[in-house]
Image (cartoon, rainbow, N blue to C red; front, side, top):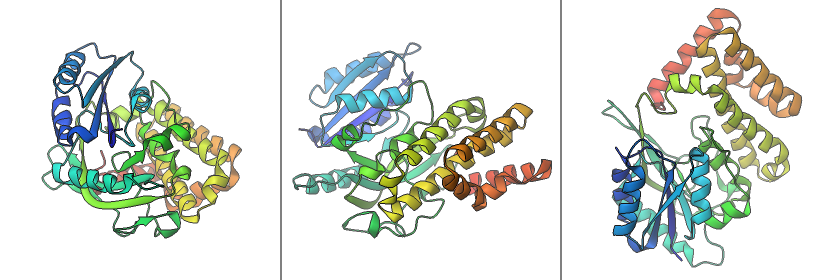
Length: 342
């Protein structure tokens, strides 16, 4: 069995996928690299995947499938994974060599235990186009260092410190056992990927290294503001799926106070993003969708709705009139400059 399986979802990625693959090859024979060609038709993505698989047959597998979107590609990666652990690295991102080798060492250290780690958390870096100073997302004040820990050992999660797909390496069987299946033809499903498995996570380790380089800043990227507004219905779909999952599995989340607090905070951030994008669009149709989203929450779980509504972000999102909406958008753009998130 391989130590780590890494899925690389690729869709017309010929311009940057090689950098991603090469950064992962440093892991050698312990790593299984799954290049998932998600129905690319406009470039040489499929050809590049096959060439790498032919050159490194014991490390790389090329998986070709009909286009189904990022979530479908991740699902295919999980289905084909044979490693003890599983990570997703998007085709325009890469990993830092020294941090990557340290992460593999830590996974290897705990792989032989009766109860291996469920989740390894590392830092990631916002590698934004045109920015000389890169923003590092780290968890030093939240997660215990240099020890295996559980949710009860975590400190208070601040709003800005939520765990993203870039941060985590999950135990593969945990993903399969919890039945994780991401929706197809939908962007922003990486939020579901890191959210739904959390109640199944019992043993965690935080490795304070800057492993993942998250490349952002291209105008065609899904997280670019103009693109998010165009795809707002997909963001709303993800938002609702996360809300429904939390309400349907509330007892599992509530088993751990810190986990439940973190899950609600994470949902608050996602809901704020959905609402602010709808406010940024600033049309009657989009503002109506914002009200419909909040009504959806209120109708399904009043307790979680009140948590979202009464928080600082909930108050800001509902500031009345054009002035209130302008303040909300301005606040968002200030946060965007500080945290470098898109």
